Length: 325
Image (cartoon, rainbow, N blue to C red; front, side):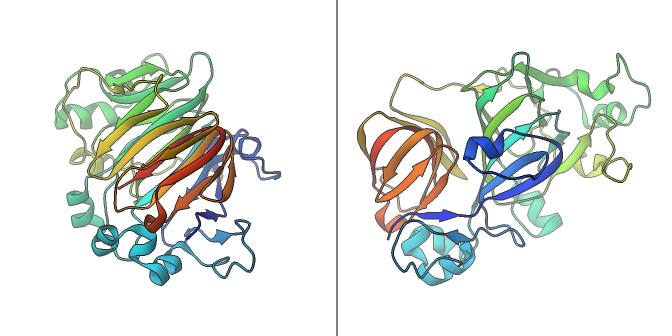
């Protein structure tokens, strides 16, 4: 089975920018594209297979769910299929933030299942490009209690144009290649001027805590979820929120958590990569172009390599993020 390509879902947002389309080599008049959903099993926004250069490709036009129904463990891996069925477990995106995103938090799997009947959301960010002075907001800079949180986030007064809640969120200077792991429960926000890749559990459950006083397209403030977030937040203060990895290696493990394993892969001529896992492999091309298992991929494209043929035979000059279970 050859790797699959999918039609990206380009999402216009209040805070979206203009970098996603040119990065992907797409020509569109769509404004303020904040997200490109590369591979998605989210109901209503399921990825649809497109031409991958094969003659008479009978899978073109099928949704990701239909492909899993058709091929089962051959596509996603036997253990993955046994656990998730036809629900694809990851949502993979490129994100372009022209403005600050809202401060938000996601529930863990247990709380999300109790409240919403679905998975929670643990995610990661890999910064592809950041403007000078761009910020990433992740975690707490000082300890607060749930009562402190509710008092701060509900305060009417602002100091220096900021809600007091902003003073307790850890702020980080963003740099190209930075890595942030965001387990469910961690307060976070992408600052203006960041272009990044995001890999997360398949869940669209977000509790918005603070939105900088912005209004939606109809002039109304966006909904906040102050009470829902109170029980979802991890109030522990951690010594470091930016994750480290060895950027000099051609293959570096970035994240290894129960929900996904992510590597950074750099190839200059040719490479064979075997993650030795019974899982699909998502490959996001960050730069350059290559041929992977007989399918061409270039900067801004993402492919899904089936579990039954998940050893990557790469020929080209490019860098990638890969995600497996």
